[in-house]
Image (cartoon, rainbow, N blue to C red; front, side, top):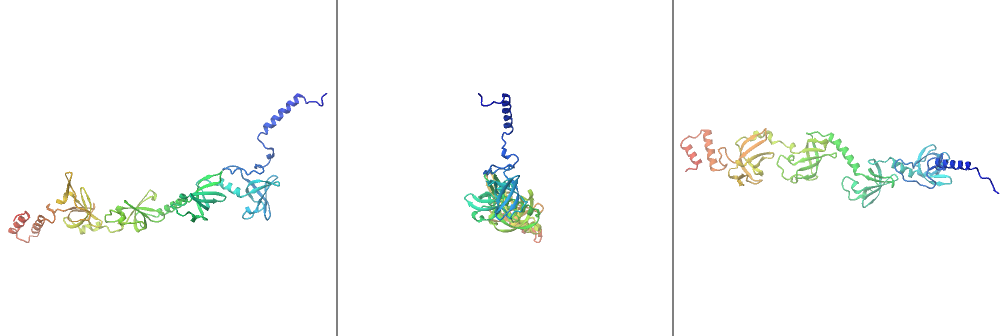
Length: 416
């Protein structure tokens, strides 16, 4: 005897079919969350979250007392947070972002600090500038805080120049550039050096805009090289003072006339590549000896000059600072040497020679010199002296031509 009737087979089949449809429809859906905000389960702190994750919950201030703040999170959802997390105290009706730390007595435990950290992470991007407080130092660099985020700055990124003592920055607030963001660990890699470089570039651009070729400025030597010296002319702008533009006088060793830290007055010669290449000159501020050279020197004039440079084809001699002439090897008489079957210039730098100005060309700024007189005799020789006397007699006509002139010719030719 049966204790009860079983449902008809067709009914059981229909129920199983309906259950299957319900399970399929509710697959992955938590019935407790239907109609409620998207909140983490009780006690769950959630993930630190990357940009775009829904880990923050907006809430409206519903009540404020001396120690706690009641927050409406949504229909039938409230939370509580310490008033100490607000500065200043909140006002009823204001809306804030909160993170959820669990539940207690039916209320969600809320935090604004975590919410601010996550909001900051969402807003930060690589290349952004942030204000960070230096909290400590380690062997690799500085430890910092950006709000609730931890930051690290390698020693090489603390400043443009090398800093020996990093402890001097502890407690300071620094404007830094964000190099990397680790959203999972809530950590930032920061650089103060990049911010300084950007500031220098802005100042440099502004300073360059005020410069014009021909202007005279004051500067300080920053470093000396074989080809010249670099000069800081202010505003983060440096220019090159080439060795050829240091003085009217030939400069062979820059370090003998200029040194780092020396203050100088220079002229802006040219500005190229948006101010990244600036040519400077000091000799341009000195009097130019070529301006009146033709009034002080003439062809066939005998002068004393100093050898400044010796080359295979001749030597350069300085008549005065900024005024040099070429003594070609062919005009040296017996003063040159032989090498490889060719005549080579003789003499040493610093040696003084008596030379004749063979020609002077102010337009081309060229002076040709010779150790020979106009007749080809070596200056200072008896032949040259005799020739000079003959020229004097022929030019002046004050002595009788005859025996005296014959004797002069005989003397010039080496006779008795």
